[in-house]
Length: 208
Image (cartoon, rainbow, N blue to C red; front, side, top):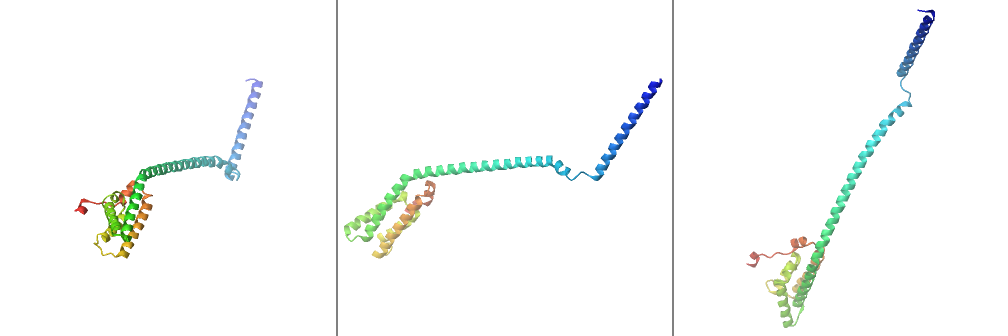
């Protein structure tokens, strides 16, 4: 080995030794930092990614909840609207029926009032015939249970199956009027299915 080469080797060894000393010094500094722990201001900074991810998850979850609630509200609104349309359609179907009911009720009440108050025998008998005609015919399809009961009670006065003086007959005539008024108010809000449940049903057993 030449003299120049020997000097170069010594220089390289010195550099390597210095590098090792610097690395050792850095390790000491890192170890000291670990023993001391992280500065207080580093922990919040380190938490930022975690908090950001958590907020993103919460935001996504809240969006899903809001979407489901909105879907439920829309579905309920559609169902309610469909039900309203169905009820309105049924009431339109009921309208001619209600008009027939009101007309028939008016005739029955007029006949009952004439029977209860007429002093002329001919007029009274004509009213009695009209009452029974309605009782046995036109009233059957349109009367509700309330009106049917009132018609039966008044009819017992007319056929004398109940002892009724004029005052009692007038009382039953007024009761028929009240029953008719209530029936008209109730059936105005009914669907046909509701009306069927509330009308009086005659049977063959009753006829026999």
